[in-house]
Amino acid sequence: MSTGTENTNDQSIATQLAGADTTSLFGVIDRDNVHGLNLDVPEQAMDIIKSWDEREDTSKFADSGVDDQVIIHVPFTQNVRVRSIILKVGRGELTPRRLRIYANYPSIVDFGDAESTVPQLDISLLESPVEATEYPLRVAAFANVISLSLFFSEAVGSERTRLYFLGFRGDVSNPKKDVRKKIDLPAANAADASLVDRVSEKSAASQSTVR
Image (cartoon, rainbow, N blue to C red; front, side, top):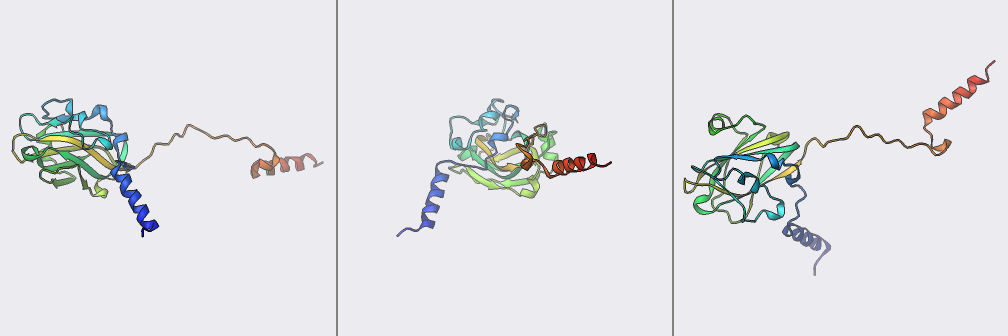
């Protein structure tokens, strides 16, 4: 006999299988300014930034160019807290085995810069994963991020790296607030007026009776 708790768990699992993801940072990625280094086709950098429900899609991908090293630079439109990265990479000889992540380093313009800069995180990736794989990050190191540079290398075949999907989970660390908007609700009657207004009116009335 099933219980209410079991039904809730079943619904939660069903939601996950349906592709719902309320923590995806896809909406705050500055997709037009995503770019890569050593890509076979430079424009392919944007092709791997897909929505959550497209994470298993293999029709679009990015391949490395002259060797197996690739850097993908991902800017965000707001400061974010990144909790994990989700990757779908090529299988077999196309699988990169190492990922170095640099936070807020827009100055990384070539592989020499990347090699001489200490990354916030250096990850050993799974070899030939079938599905998109999530890698948790140290939240303290990625608590206030405006851009990420991801350095993929050490492909199994040592010649080419392939990337299908690059996504992130987390939340906006500094939500934008529109301070220009002001809510002005006029009082409908004396009972709705503020206490300060009523006290001021009473004080003025008292002063007008003084001789």
